[in-house]
Image 1 (cartoon, rainbow, N blue to C red):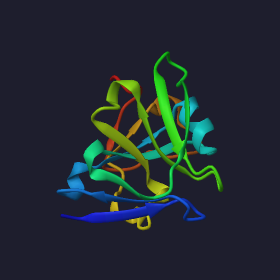
Image 2 (image 1 turned 90 degrees about the vertical axis):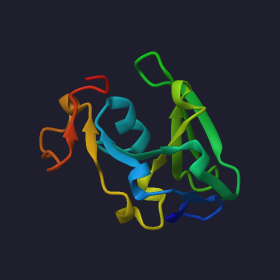
Image 3 (image 1 turned 45 degrees about the vertical axis):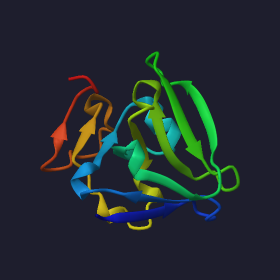
Length: 140
C-alpha cells in the first residue's frame, strides 16, 4: 500500500495519502476558467482520490466555498498562513472523493496525469499532453 505525504509550503498543514494502489488516484489537468483562477496559472492539477485515503496529520486548513462558475458548489482548502492550496471537492463528491493539489505532494512525480478536462479552454500556446485522455468539457 503506497503512502504519499504532502504539505503546504510553510508545513503548518501536513497530510498523507494511503492508497491501495497508485492507480486509485486519477490525476488530471483542468483548463476551465475557475481552475485557472484558483491555481493562479493556466490550468489546475489535481489527483482524485477516495476520501478515506486522505488524512490530515498536522494543522487545520481554511476553507473557501463558492460556485465554481457553472452552478456547482466547490470547497477549496488551503493554509491560512502561507496560502498554499491543498485540496478541493464539490458537493456532489464530498462524501466519496477529494481532489488533492498535486503540487502539494512531497513527491508530485508519483501521480502523473491520466487526462485533461476543458481542453476547449486550453491556452493556445500549450500543447496536448501525449498518451492521456482529452475531454473538451468535464461531461463529454
